[in-house]
Length: 128
Image (cartoon, rainbow, N blue to C red):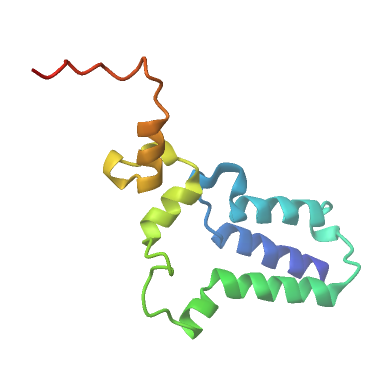
């Protein structure tokens, strides 16, 4: 029975997508590492709590199949902040330097403007 559980988890790992943009924070990578550590001996691994193992597999399988997204559809693909899915992915990826100048928030623009030292700002010519 342990071999069946092992094969089910391997199949789930194959189906689970990886997000290369998240690097060390990717859930797919974490899942693969956990399966490898839980099934060190492969199909011969003895599972101490088979019910908990099956429950964990079923929960992960529902997440992977978008069960909850289909059961509870969203009206819009934005959050209360109004940020779109693409903007949210960009923020979570850690590549903030890719943001365009016009997409910077007001706070960042003000910080950049007022954090410059007086030497960096060119002097204005006196008006006549």
